[in-house]
Image (tube, rainbow, N blue to C red):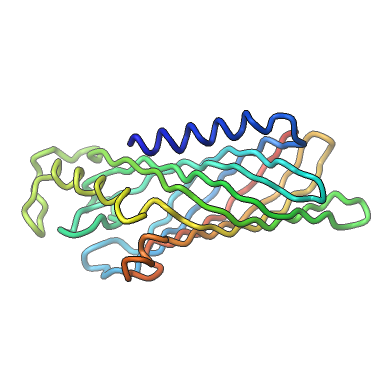
Length: 220
């Protein structure tokens, strides 16, 4: 939980430090898909989470873009004795309050005769901050039907895995499009893919990879 506060503080410091640049405040809303390659008999199929986000686009000279963004969502988890696994609502133990905090850089292209169509390509790093609590309707002493542990102990173990072995670190690639409605407002969409560095290093491949699709509304 402390690391989540550190990441959030860095995000706010970054936003304040670039106040002099050509900048847009933007908001995002849309689904995220978390890839689950584990056995569905002990975990849920790849879950879809719905997120809301806020961020800033900071345009440097030569159309170089620096971006900070954070999106917020929740997901259900269970403990299988070794790892935190995505869970269906009927099998959930914990609800994770989640924030993906992104720092990225890239390039913006202006297209069309009006120069109102903006395409951006960025790459960077995402910090996946999560904190699990007992899900609604789950009691601390409820037993894990597979391994017999208590729900409260499972939640502690789930939280332990979130920041272990770089499970919080996600390199990312993003593509976005915006149309200038006026000198103040832009509207468009974005696609982001997040690669689970911890999973790759631990031999679990792309298990936990996240794909995000969102509406993006910008205000200058």
